[in-house]
Image (cartoon, rainbow, N blue to C red; front, side, top):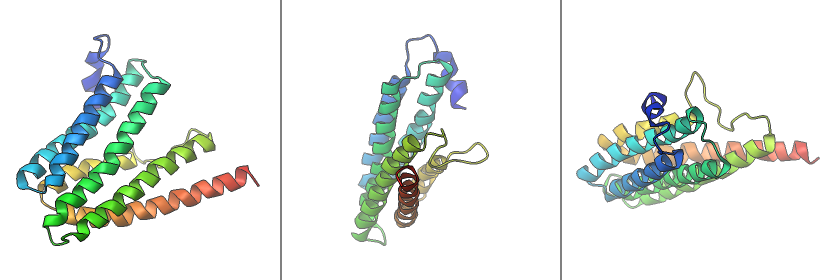
Length: 192
């Protein structure tokens, strides 16, 4: 779907970095709205999150189909994605503090955010050192693992952020442990 939307942008002066900047701004807006923990904040947070997630796909598609790929663009996209995907769980923890978890929601959000950050950094390190071109988190059947982040929008709308924060703290912690073990094994094979 992103390819269909961005193809008309080729030759217009719109660059992938423009879309990455929009992704960053809408993602930050989603984080602020979700952190409010109000029905209005959740509505707008979910809408902005879905738009941000779509723009995350669109910038890469525009870079590929418009032959505008660059190392600096990739680095900007990577940093924006990492920041937003880390912050959304912290924002969810702050917003969920009004629910059944109370102040513990913030702690769960911090754990999920820190673990997500480890996943991003260790995953990137793994991919660079592996050299095979294989992604650290390979998807299946045309879906990337981070496509699951699209589900956050509806979960935010339905007021399920307390469950999301707890689940994210557990899942991202396990994922962080797995990628750290994989990275350590890769480094051990490369440097016996």
